[in-house]
Amino acid sequence: ARNTCTCKYIHMLTTPLPLPPPPPPDDFAVAAALARAAHRLSTPAAATAASSVVASLRDQPGALDDVGHWHAALERIAAGEARLDAAQQQVRALASLSDETSLDVSTADRDTARSSLIAVLSEALELHDAEHGESQWRRKQDEAAALRERFDALELHERVRLQTLEGKLLPTLDAWMGRIVSV
Image (cartoon, rainbow, N blue to C red):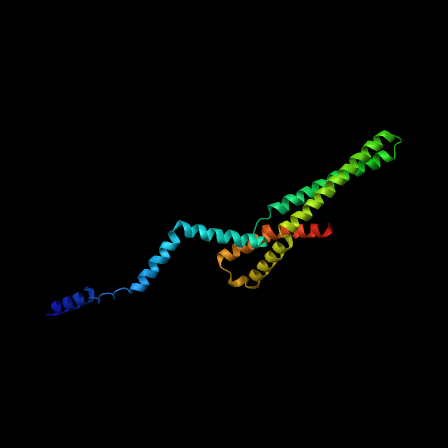
């Protein structure tokens, strides 16, 4: 009798209880879900979404992470300054000699280097205005400050973002802003 009773309890514990049938889906909910899925998967909707994103980025170029153009402009400025310094040293060296012809040639080279540097600096100022350099710098500074304020609560992707800001973007933007202010 004991085995029969135990078997009944085991059978009751292992047999799943019949579940009531699920309620019929609401027609409106089904239609809404299908419409959302069709919209997300349709090519025109994707094109519309992409156009919207591109337009918003064009309206706010300072929000972008691209700093390659600032880095290249800094390199052009440094190269122009180095050419001018070398030409100026050449003029100083030849000024102590009595060779007027070499001094004239060296002075002309220095003047060319100076004109070239002025052109590079003018291009840098135009780039700064066209690419909204100060706006981009301020946005990245604000974003980094907001992430630093809640550093202990940051998720992994936010920590990676902060590392990218501090390791790559802000050093280039800080150098750019420091350099463009002196122009």
